[in-house]
Length: 405
Image (cartoon, rainbow, N blue to C red; front, side, top):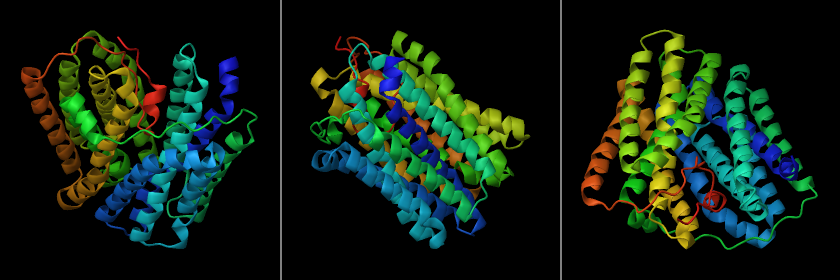
């Protein structure tokens, strides 16, 4: 209880951040459809989000060092709030793409600061409990954001104003807490080659995870519209995906700690292809089958990133873990930036099923590469503990520090 109280301000800020920034993703897709934006333009907004996210991951540690945690957090939150509020003032898809860059910047910047603050306060004894609560709050806020969309009219001032209010609420707990802000540590160096040198399979896995997650999160509402779901049903559709992904973490983590992670990654990729098949087949059924397919798709695809990062960390030295996590986040962003544009163009040109054919092909490549690496790659000497790894900032590696076996 003492631990929970000491981090309460940070956790409340995380929850409101998720309500605001997590809600703008599906709301933009629904609003863009109402306003007559093309699928490609809506996909471009999703890619712009991850471009801003990457810039924020790089910039946030440096800004923290210059102005401190609280001021940097306020600055990034203000950027995200500005991006949300400006939507209904300028109804242009390319302007919205710029606003979504601000949202992506805010996601990366705010989470970098919160995770740096947590890292400075946790000990090895409290790390597990703190991260457990952190993940629970993060997932709850994400789920709440998806449900919220069911009640917000698309392309309306009131909807974007409400999301902006949540962003404003996120500022108060962190700025008004009596807890002393930590001193800023050194920013991790960004060395993408490190991820490849430690584990080529892990590097490819996080790229495929970026392709999969970004396509569904950013373009999934277009798929829902294309298969006949109403706006309130789309919110539940996205919620089913999040719930499925959350439920997967414990069983998949147990398997990944018990067996060869290369084999587990190949197996979960096979399951992901089945998830894509379920999404295509589910569209031919009723609403229940679509929701069940979305939950199964989330269950099979969410763990890809965590398994890939765990496999790479099996080969890393203790002093390399933070920079390795940063390199993996960079590769995730590479896949996530390209994916929404490709997925939206496929839906526009070939129908909703084409997005999942694209995702399935990415997993086929991961399976083939995984089988190849099992033939030529070295077996890790021991497993580091599997942990659910959020894709939030370059500093997440410090919070999810694995034991040096």
